[in-house]
Amino acid sequence: MDKGRNQFTFTSNQIVRFYNTYKSLAGFSVVTYQTPANYTLADYAKAPYNASVQILTPGKMITTDSGINAYQIMYYDNGSGYNVKDMDTVVINTKYGMLHILTYRTEPPGFDANLGKAKQMVDSFQFTN
Image: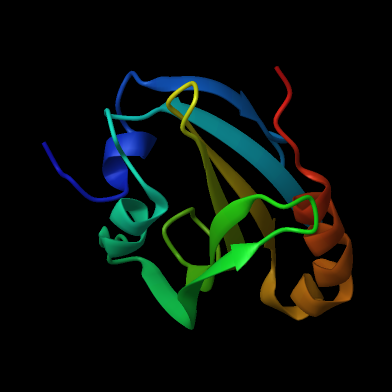
């Protein structure tokens, strides 16, 4: 089994996915996966991306405004059938072994126009019991 990011994309440990199914000007999705035991943000950061991805800014560890540690990266993705620009923010709820990928995605010309709103959405993300 591929030990990279694909382990979360193509296996049965996907729990929930919220996203639009049509091409839009900008979109924000949340995908939740069950993680292996003791899986960390550092583990996620070390995993390779698909060949269709061109990294724009190196991934970095951040703390959201709501106090959650996260890993964030921006990249172009040509593997989805059309050229898009993405910002992924990954958070792990270690209490429940859940990994959440918050993705802001749009065509490159419109990316910066909505980036502030996407960052507000990321910063408002919180865990509930």
